[in-house]
Amino acid sequence: MMKSYIKWLFSNDTETSDEVKKIDFPIEDRCIASLLCHMIGDQLGAGVEGYSASRIKYDYGIVRDDIEAPHMGIHEVGPRIHMYTDDTNAMLALASSLVLNNGLKPKHAARSYAEFWSTGIKRGYPESAEESMKCVLEGKIDYRECGRITFGEGSFANGGAMRIVPIALAFRHASNEQLYKAVQMAIISSHVHPNGIDGAFVLAKAIILALRCPSIDAFVPDQFLNVLHKTARTKAMKDQMKKLLNFYSMKHKVDSGGAKHEITDIDVVKALGDTFQIKAIEAVPCALWIICDSYQEPEECLVRGVNMGGDTDTVAAMIGDLVGALHGSHWIPARWSNHIEPNSEENLNRGKELAIDLAKKLAAMDLTDVLEDDD
Image 1 (cartoon, rainbow, N blue to C red):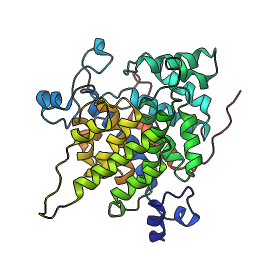
Image 2 (cartoon, rainbow, N blue to C red; image 1 turned 45 degrees about the horizontal axis):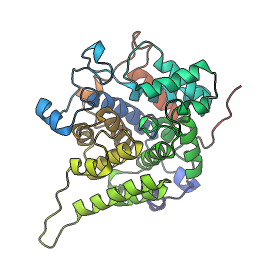
Image 3 (cartoon, one colour; image 1 turned 120 degrees about the vertical axis):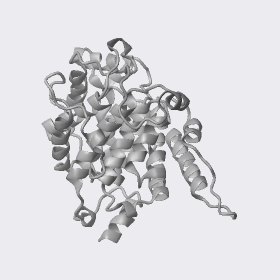
């Protein structure tokens, strides 16, 4: 049975066979770890978001722990530490909506994002995201059109991908068509650009592959990237995945003299596009690169994700989605786990304990279809 699973894992089959579904995986622990590592990555990168790799190195050496510093976009509130950003807030909003409805109701998810944002707690949302959520709350136009308020063709940014992990966990047995639909409808109130959707879709598929991998020894990076290359639907995302495949092949190919090509994370970042990785088709491949190159060292994956600079909290949160899904929770250092923002009156009990509870409930789900919106 395990051989049939591994064959399925790297075949890009759109359906999960009943035989594969029967394999016993530690799903609950991996779901919990995925959400917690998302929060860890978010907090770890929050203090240096927008910094270049060289500035991070100059100011901090190597960032391995949360940093007390102002968060990007909300410098007026001053330095903060051990606090998550909009990346986690949006993720918890989506997870909460899924659990409350026992499925995905797109309109409810759209309102959940807006309600989690409108608490008075500043989490560093970009202006475009705020405008789309104001649009949803006002209800003057269809929520599915709110993603065009700022950008006529929709946002190509990474905000859809950064929140998508609950969809991956709950729809882990869905076909590719079902998964794409779920991803699309989960973020439609803010992200309607094909590239923004495709980045989120590829990340969701990657999380599912990691979640369903029976052991770290069964993870094969180049086959993983090949599946994701085939999964991508837009030319832009396919081109990015092709670059990753080429970089991975170059770095791990040994020449006749026994030497390997020296390829740095910064080489990859620059080749993928803007070094801030604002586009989904830039941020997601950065996260995938780190996973494929260091998947056996989950802590180093998160550290590398932050120290490559750019949109550090978002890329590290995505890496957290993946390492949690792949490794579970056993490896998470206490210095990180103990400092995940906890439930409190100040954050309306939307912290670590909520994430664990939501993850357990997502693990119990097995969704395939998007539900109808309530009137």
